[in-house]
Length: 129
Figure 1 (spheres, rainbow, N blue to C red):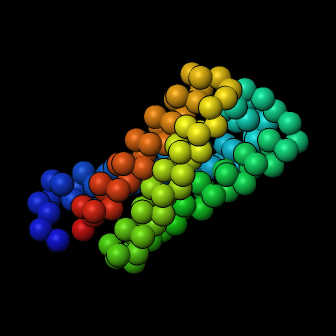
Figure 2 (tube, one colour):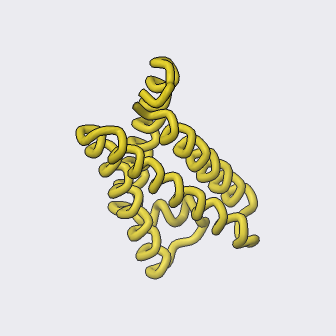
């Protein structure tokens, strides 16, 4: 159990699973409706933006599904998927932070959500059983 108490491990499990489900939902939406997601996320829609959104959606869908499916194969496998998702979220937060343009409210919300998910993923990965 890596020295974790059951309450901490249960919370880590719940948190990792919740992030995975959110990631799947975002991935499905971005893959199937990239124009709508582009307008909500970036305030713009173009063929190039749709391609980018669809690619990011597929990434999130794969990361979320990988995390959920890996729970059947032990904590080391699951931990790796949770960590991979956290790295992707940290990169997203950094990219939006460095972009420095666009709607400040949208950017701020994206930075906050991505950074919070990265931190929560790192914590959950450390405490998974």
